[in-house]
Length: 182
Image 1 (cartoon, rainbow, N blue to C red):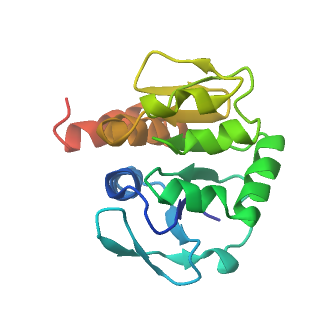
Image 2 (cartoon, rainbow, N blue to C red; image 1 turned 120 degrees about the vertical axis):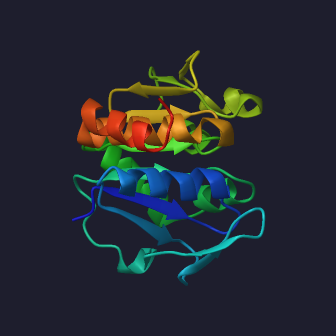
Image 3 (tube, helix red, strand yellow; image 1 turned 60 degrees about the vertical axis):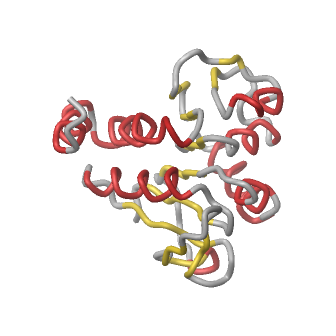
């Protein structure tokens, strides 16, 4: 079983996806990148193509995994339009599963009602789309089973928070130290 699953669609924000994958793996988190395109190669918004570990149709049980959504334009729209992913997010949240989203991707959670009465953040121009969420005032916010972050510049904080959640404070601090962040 994978501890974390990061979903990729064409137009994903490269920093948010690649740095998150990198930092989670540095933290010893069993993490996979999953393509929603039907093929393993996925192109980011700035023309960088990465090879996903799996395609969505090959993804098995994700119970117990953290589901992660990077932002990007048009990547967020592609995630929002993937009905099977939306159903997976709904079910995962209903089971209390951990979900993380950054940049514009928290708006997907807002549209699904997952952020109702939770504190959350997203890319500043998209805040109205968080619906019933309470707006946070930090770069990254965890409220219960949901973690959100503002955008590309907050990716390192976001990814380290995910390591902290999945592996503890000591591991997150060790990863930060190894990256010369402290």
